[in-house]
Length: 215
Image (cartoon, rainbow, N blue to C red; front, side, top):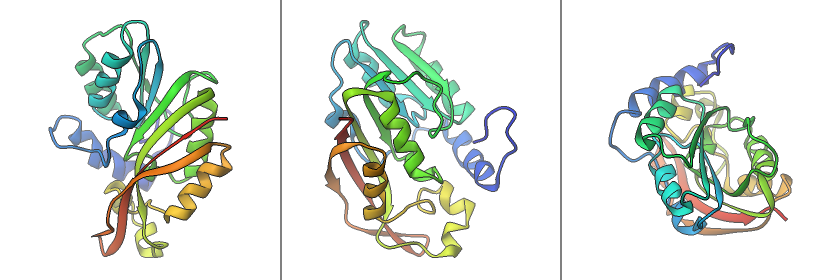
């Protein structure tokens, strides 16, 4: 979704059309269990990229406790509003409306970064992972669940904003996804979970959950 002052693109409009109504629904928007693997601890700072309605963010806030921080980042205003309402003024929760490739937080802000089925919407995955690297302190960890494609998607899908909004048009092959992470300078990357490929919109995609660290 475009931020204030930005001209909306076709992709921005498609994401807005899909996700703003979902801010008030009960359905799951995730494709993995990132918090289970990230295991945020008391006093830590966690940043959730694409926090959506804030359900995982609230669980993270409980895990880090009053001495920690749980920071949710999302570009969709309705999602940020829903997450803020869910948090109910909890002191350790902060919400930030920002593009995932340009997060308005200081360098080294986080002990742990998580993201659940959000980075596939970004046109430049490498830029998002450079932000993950920047946001993490030295030695900090990340856990991400996301959608990748079995093979490179045809232009008919890649150029369809509705397919991007539906969590498959922006998918890239797993090897390319892992290469973007490595190019960002992140290390110790391993795939924790990989689903069987499934068909969506006439193409085959799958969900992966991976972890890694900033050296």
